[in-house]
Image (cartoon, rainbow, N blue to C red; front, side, top):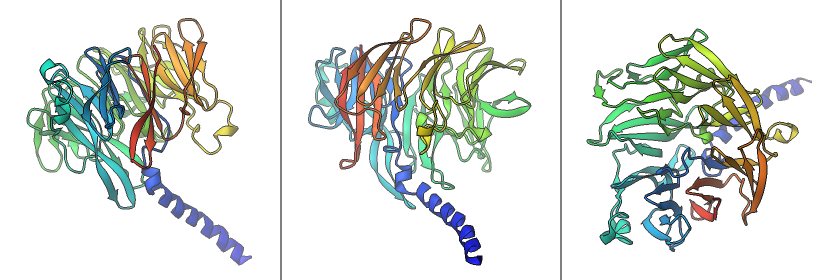
Length: 451
């Protein structure tokens, strides 16, 4: 009998130890095979994206169609495909009149018992607009390393109109091995770090704190002035305005420009743990008078910045949690899923499928517009339609009526919703990428025109 008691006491300890080892294993930290990823664009013609972008009448995307893996471009009808510059893999892409800025693969890194692909920030001259230097010039132009620290593993990078480089950095959380996302600002002119986030405790700078239910949860940075780094008395000065909402550990930030445009949003891959109060806020919209915040993925709040008063605008059922938000006609549309939809026992739950909600801000109402079949996922959304994927099929829905109506399907040759796959849409095309274990990179397996 005593042996049985000892066994029951030892088993939980062993389970905890082995579960910790699993969280710290390379597989647990491999972001490329962890889960299916969709990269949404708020504007289908955006000059920024993850692996795709549009600029000056052409669509840019990662591919090996020319025989060389790199960023290619084509016309909107799919013709005129050409290599712009070689790149093993990229995690973000921004195109300006002068430059291509991107987070490109650098090397494989082994740290403790974690192995992961490291990316860094690069800049290349945009010779696409120079008729005398087309075709090979961009490929021959050496990539310039952006001002980053050696230990930074860049998740994405954005250059603002007023000369700030915004980096989001992926790093392992050494307490449990889970990946986290941190934010850094760098002045593009001289490469100086404007702020550096370290566990939410090294910074002291003027912020607007939003009080909800008597507690200060999100931090809203509306005017970056003089920033003082705690402990060393060092100060940095920033000349820009930004609205930034992040959790208490300053991870997975929503970043808006001074004119209210969304520069970067929370990444679905780094979805919060809704049981932890410090990770339950998402910034949906900034205005001069107030801000809209999503609490725990299901409750939309409006906070008046002058009075500090907060009111609930709408609330969706708690079995659904928003993983992406879009502005729509003065209101919002939310893409949701069940917090437990990726658990081993998800098949036992009825309502674990993804759903689309519409929120009327003026009428303080919310409505479920569409619920997808189980194991289906949204891959595209705009004002008039939604596209979902299930198996090898794309499902097309019209959103112009009271309820979503399926209008057609399209069959691909590859299973779409798979943990090794990534989908991104740009310029009326859908690009399906799959992580190749042999080449250790994302590779384009299909591109189809979706109109």
